[in-house]
Amino acid sequence: MYTTAIDDELRRIERDVVEGERRLAEQEALVIELKRQNQETAKAEAELERMRGEQRRRDQDRQRLLSRLQP
Image 1 (cartoon, rainbow, N blue to C red):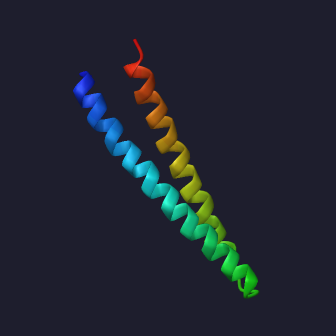
Image 2: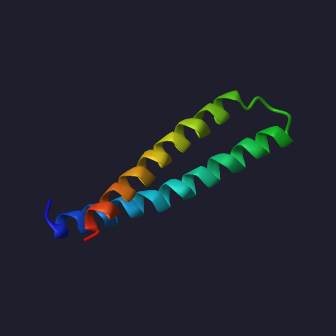
């Protein structure tokens, strides 16, 4: 892969990582609010775990691309 293509992909993934962090924060806030209201949290917590898995994969992709840019 050419450096320019790696740079483009890295920029895309970094945007996705930032957006993923924002969505994770929203989901975490939802779980906290549901708990505060003594409501069922199982579905929200399961979604949070799924989202965390996606975020880990994005972080791994970012690290993989960064390592390809190393001399």
